[in-house]
Image 1: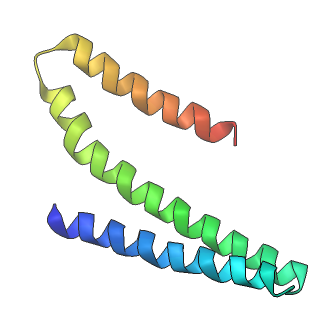
Image 2 (image 1 turned 90 degrees about the vertical axis):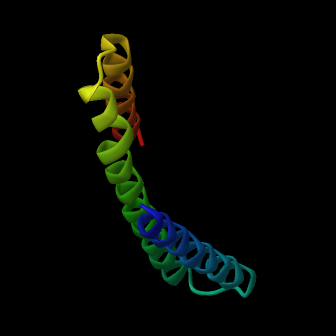
Length: 91
């Protein structure tokens, strides 16, 4: 579990550095398509991080709730997952 957290934090830090690079490109007046390509790379990196976090959530919190005895907690975590996917569709 700790290794997963470290992996996520490291990816976030890397992406943060990438965003700083994009900021510098804008400040320096880099070619617009180059900036767009770098923004796309940042978005892909964030999507990968989101997938890792969701995977961790499914294997911990959701699994615990599904296996638990509280039907309202099961419904709550299922609703959370549905909301995440609904929100993703609106992007």
